[in-house]
Image (cartoon, rainbow, N blue to C red):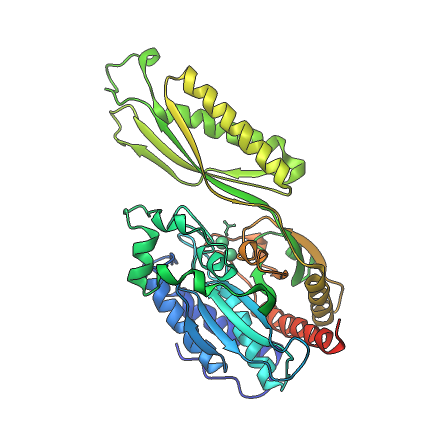
Length: 430
Ligand code: GLV
Ligand code: MN
Ligand code: MN
């Protein structure tokens, strides 16, 4: 879809309408006909990246695709200042979960582009460069690792992950090459810390707090601690009609016990906002008359503190080991991803609070993010900050995800106001 560049200053409503048109255009780029599914390094990802690249160019950014498939749209500083050799990064992601909503990630990229458009239309000259980033692997659905593209940008990508494979056996390395990326150049794509002023992201809240408070926007204080694991249970296949119950090595029954314990452990850790999810299960050989021999399932654990998350993972692992003996199966627990709490930088949360407060006409509410974001990588590069946007009923990772046109317009205005505030700070030497 061609987006005609905005001419002059638009109203908040008009900006929201532009955002809606862009959301709609991206939402039809999918691997599934009747649902939105856009996984990392797929033809759909490529198509969306090309569309976003075109929008960036139309907004006056010079766009390129990096070696990890991230679209980077750059704008040089328009004014001089003590940090005019630095760049403010603004990003989010254009990959989705399976049967996704239209706003998760995509909105943040669109808001970044529309903010640039308005900065230019309003003649705001910044004393630092700007780059809008459209990452491709925030959801981590295709491969057992996640945040690949932002980890590359932050210079923290572990090249061992190039050997992990998707369900069809395609490795991350192979997928990158097929996409047009370059596994050999990932290291060179890292930003240099001293050249980065900070990283800002706008994202839907994916929870109900802002809607309940009647506020369109909020300021994120931190992203929860998170880890992802793969649990594999090996039992023994057998005939469903002939093997007596006490003689079975049923891998699925062992898995079921572990899964219920995962839920029980997470429920008792409530005060640390502990949550645990088993979202993907494979049962082999997978026939109704065969005792399951081999079960693999995913485990995702998150908490407000690293300690609470680690303690829960340890308790789950210990329980799994005990099942091992009692049920005569072999249980393996592998950690695929582990990220500590990512704390937003006070300098940026202050600027965001000023921007959000000015735009929504009342002080900005602070929230912690239970969901994962590219900021978990970018925090390792320097300061990061996030703006949350209200979404209906807090629904996300669901096709019913919804954000109003007005709230999208307000989100762009808040990002513009935050960037202007950072510009003022730079000029004042703060
Ligand atoms: C991504 O949305 C995640 O939190 O896993
Ligand atoms: Mn997201
Ligand atoms: Mn998501």
